[in-house]
Length: 321
Image (tube, helix red, strand yellow):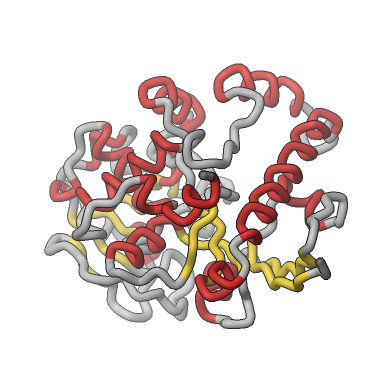
């Protein structure tokens, strides 16, 4: 069989470096990677020349619930992250835990995003109802940032005024906190007025994992349906390639000791808590997390039709039978 050329859009991840470098052979496939940290998800959806790409997990669930099955999901999850680190406030608010956010005004960069869906799940897990917060959706730092469509928003969620950033409103006292994936501009400055709600977010995230045994997946890989239906074997080859790349990275990561001076104890502590493979792929390996994300998407009102892991990855499961 000759090699089939595929264009793959994905962000930069160290665990796919062996695949990008050509160290992982993919039988029958010639992969052309488009790597873009800022636009990979939009490229996947918007560029029809991209046959395979990284997808927002929550937005994929929204499309499935709406009957849009233009992409077939592969249970490869390139991004898995905790979320307690994603809440920011000012020094003068006195907010130092998630429970303190009841009755406050919180800005967020996007409503349907997977990361923010998980962040709201963390709030709910701490007993904070989403209706107890007045939400504002808008750009964090760049007033000219073009927002993705946000869908139907709950009554206590509003869109920010054009040209105004959430950071500006936080500093002006118009917001009490911001929930976003990366620190707002100026967070790392000396004497910055912005701080994390959890100063020791690492301890908070470890405690969350110990309570729930959940390590949240954010993105998944998807194949355009027309490509999958023409050559369904592509899904298994891609899954195996990503898994092999991750395994090779795991085998060598303890040699990358120049990343930070204390990488070895960090790796030892992480593997003691999460296991040697803390980025597992596959429906069964991540079933608990997939079920949780499906339930949160439904209970948070992102989808009207309940979903479960078997329906989300129906085509993949058929391949494995």
